[in-house]
Image (tube, rainbow, N blue to C red; front, side):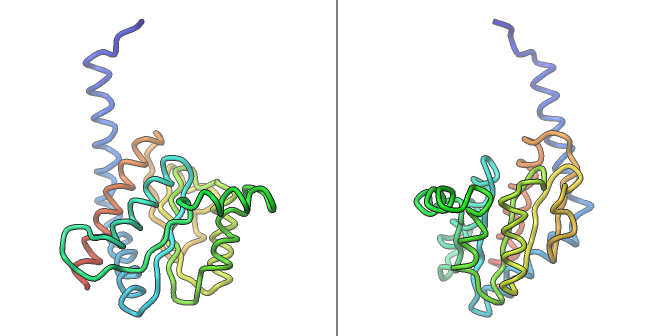
Amino acid sequence: MQKFSDNQIESCIQNSMKAIELLLEKKDLIKNAGDMIANALTSGNKIITAGNGGSAAEALHLSEELIGRYKYERPSLAALCLSADCTAITCIANDYGFESVYSRQIEGLGRKGDVFVAFSTSGNSKNLIKAVTAAKNADMKVINLLGKDGGQMNGTGDCDIIVPAPNTENVQEAHQVILHILLEIVEASI
């Protein structure tokens, strides 16, 4: 068994720091996304999130912090993670295919003024691309948290925040920083 060296550990940490440092160039976009979420919530609308794999965990993290709380005592906020309902996902995947697992849920749950937040490190997930289209058709706002070059989802949202890091894990780490900032903006607005 080959040992993981100190240099390799240092490289992992440096790659993470570089990806997060790139967010300094995205401050305006992050503020715009936070305001979009806060405005929807204070207007009585909800936030709907989704992602695949590790990005599903990020999507769930954002929605659960809105429903529960992040740092401050406040009323529960309307949020829903489409990645969390395994019965809906398996039913829809069985009947319509995996590409429809999120769009079908948005068709049933999304309303004008709601915000859909999609998490994708590649920007090429067919089910999220289809979900963005469904959200737009429902007159929802769309925030895309993307990685690398943004993939096919680049330019499809009302606010696209792209972390141009080459490694998936570093994009996810930066997305977590973004979602925490979004929560800070929301709680400061409530």
